[in-house]
Length: 200
Image 1 (cartoon, helix red, strand yellow):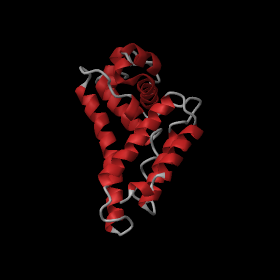
Image 2 (image 1 turned 120 degrees about the vertical axis):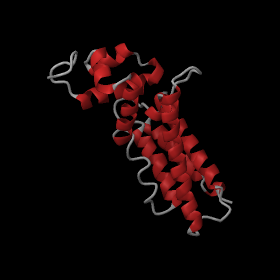
Image 3 (image 1 turned 90 degrees about the horizontal axis):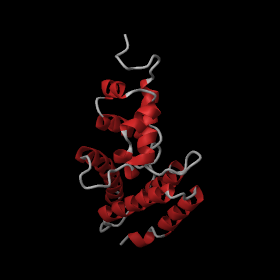
Image 4 (image 1 turned 135 degrees about the vertical axis):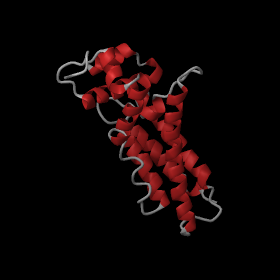
């Protein structure tokens, strides 16, 4: 028997995807329970019974985003033939991913973060952890290139990784502001044009 308040035919994955869309568009703090339940097609008791809390729902929505809409950007970093190719892939895959669909929406993990000081600390930490992990992934790939003799020993892997992540986050904001795929690819072009200048 379905839990009280849950509509017949309730599709948990579909409801989660709809919640993800709300968080992506509005951010964590601005997405009200009314917004979420309306989009998900359920009532508040069903939301709590199924997902536990707004925060838990958001965590699941972030994981869904990483598996679906946000996939394809970071997965090739480890397997790219060179460090330069890895960074090039991240930037151009970002241009593609952030401009999918009829509207450019950028990255949920960058744009959904609470913007006020009294915001939910756990949510802030979840998003911060994901952002840091991407930078660490790039740094490890760059260090591997140094160890293999592909890059000079004095290459500042941390600084380069942080720079690329900063550019990538900026592309997210540009996308949210309406930048086209061609505009984001031009940003990637400019970044890669300066690759040699990043090396000692």
